[in-house]
Image (cartoon, rainbow, N blue to C red; front, side):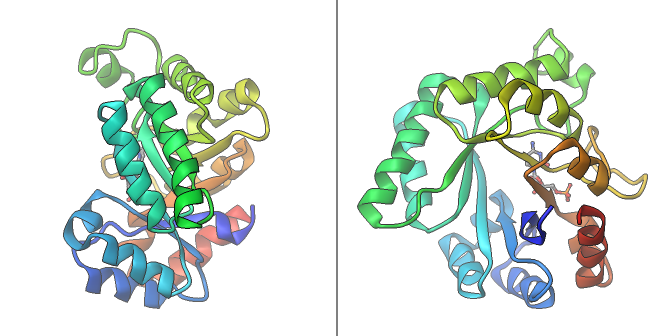
Length: 235
Ligand code: C5P
């Protein structure tokens, strides 16, 4: 896997913290993921800062709303010049289609590259029990991930976010061009709030296109060294 396939999750509370982290990762990592914590704290300035420093950005705001609202949010996300964004696949085909179409239109209107639009399948923090008893989905995690990814493809999305454990079946069902992004990467037994985890090498071998790693890098005493170690496993 090429080094630019590692995206570091900038789950920090301020623009200054994000900038400090990127300064330490400069020359090691080329991509980052900005999620709801940093975006709520710092807004589009966070994307601008990362792009100015030469990092490409996956803006992970997981939109889940009515189609018109998601289309508008997708348009504004594309305008920021991010290379990838996501919506919840459980929002339905009409909602996902609205996002895919909005991304295409925004790319034309704002003369930016069209971002990849991904569908979030089942959060990597959920296990079978939580999916069944709390979310109310009676099938297995694998079956539900495959179902949502299939609907995402029908809606015209480019790929999906899933745990490393579902990559194999996803690749088989959706083929080589389907973009698979996976968080839930852990090298040690410590999993934090994630339940469906795998090591960097397992994710690579299963066929992930991008891996998202947060705390194993951002909470390490030396984030650059931690990123280098993970990159060596992905190579
Ligand atoms: O710190 P950690 O490596 O667990 O971070 C994983 C990142 O991936 C977090 O930013 C989280 O929001 C995100 N994510 C996830 N599961 C998904 C989609 C995104 O953990 N299904």
